[in-house]
Image (cartoon, one colour):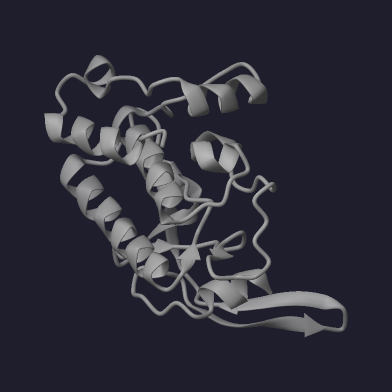
Length: 195
């Protein structure tokens, strides 16, 4: 129901369309657009990194979809490669608004942490109220991973990972992939601001 309430209002070519949601015989269901293709997870590890021009186009499409969702008052809160599909027709689709939050909702819970830890923003980790900037941080993490083949923050356990995301600077792209144009570092630095 949450996914339908938040994403069901979104009509954008880069967002999976949700047609209906409800309950039938005590079984919940969501009827959504069928998307055939592969998630960006397929291109998140070496040697399968996506060519730079295609990567730029793909993530620009995701950013456009998120901008639209944010303008509608919806924050995704779980942006990660597995939630971004590229169809057989090479169309980018953002999916799984399952933990999305309608920003104006009266049921705001600031002490609940939702999302996938590797891609969480510092605000999500702290259980603070999030807005579209949290999705931008997560998209920066996705970009970093798709450029380098590894996430910017890793640790031996969940507590150390969450601490690193909240307090440590992200690695320099050039140290991991020296041939990247400097503009990528600038985009990463802006997207992954701690505040």
